[in-house]
Image 1: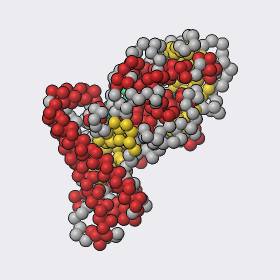
Image 2: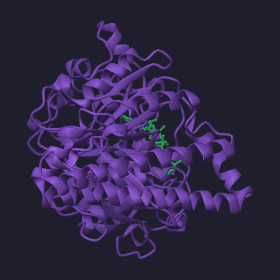
Image 3: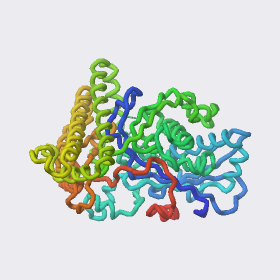
Image 4: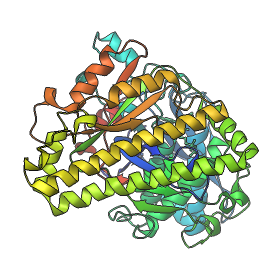
Length: 520
Ligand SMILES: Nc1ncnc2c1ncn2[C@@H]1O[C@H](COP(=O)(O)OP(=O)(O)O)[C@@H](O)[C@H]1O
Ligand SMILES: C[C@@](O)(CCOP(=O)(O)OP(=O)(O)O)CC(=O)O
């Protein structure tokens, strides 16, 4: 199969970090602070340029970063509204014998929805040349430790920047070491959104407008509902869905949907006999998730680290939920305390963005000032109001101190949750590492993302403009990470994504993507 890029559709969607709200966000009474990352998953959909061969319609999906990662499917129409997508057995050199449930379900359910919204005949026409789909994830989704050490590079941001984009992992998908940024949610979202655009199920400008549930386009909401449903089906469980929501809408305060909305469609049988559109449609009011806009303050930077000591999220979640069920009163008190703190954190961080808009000079000076001092010292200088724009300058610093204090209080309460339910949410090794990081000059706060455990951490650090790289708080943090003895800590390149969720891309503007698409 050869492919042309003239008619290609390229869509990307970001990874996620649940900064605050782990476990709470599983309950619709509480929300989570979700930051979407600059690391993205890309789906490139091409039409096969050769004349259609007689025989069934073909869809080829490739993930060139992995070994044995080409999947070939036949699409068959059976009557006016039944479409079947079957994986072709390993009878060609280019197709692998492995299955990819996530990809298969994304194709199967998206084409089913398409048949309901267009006619089978129209869809058959759109697919007559087949589809050639390439999937690629930014390096951050997979641990690059092995690749760095193979090149004798230390685990630093500078080294990560030297690795080729969409670096080959050298392994099969099942063997890859994930970093917890939500590869499957970002993959499903980019694939489903790309297909909806390519098949004209949603208008071409669906992802041009941004926003949460209030202002997003109907096309974006449809992509969300469909991706959320397919992701649940592929995972075989209904989580809170914050990862898909971040992939679709970007950074946000997320409140989950009631899982009963998709219950009628959760049977694994193919094809599903229940029509999808009445359930998936954005006009179905049973979709009661809420996405409120959120972003990190200006001149700060989110830093993420991959900590090598893997833990298993599902077992953590099961134990915490069991404890909560058995201790409802104590749990409610703790959940409410944490929620008050989480809500306050979101408000304080959003407030900093407003302050920067209103008084950019005082804000910039304050960030610059605190970026060279440990948080305990930020207000220590009695002459602080003499320094710059007086009251406004001091007020900015006070707000940063508040943000720092809240993140520390959240950590303490998450540790309590862990102790009470006998789950290593912020285990002692992570506490020691985080305490060290949080005391570095210019660090606002940090924590264990999502469900916690041993495998990751996040930090929010000041990032004043026009400052030499080696003098930035991020460089100080990197030095701590690279010399830390008790845990193996490796940085991730990602920061917060400025683009809000899923977006359309141009091949030539994404470094390295063209090479991946044309790799064989
Ligand atoms: N680059 C990729 N190409 C194709 N499929 C992928 C890719 N990355 C992830 N997947 C799919 O997602 C699955 C992993 O899902 P899951 O274990 O839920 O991961 P995560 O915790 O990252 O969401 C893989 O088995 C595969 O089906
Ligand atoms: C416990 C949770 O609230 C958060 C888990 O967040 P993680 O980021 O740890 O999740 P994975 O992507 O599964 O590793 C469960 C949920 O919200 O679904």
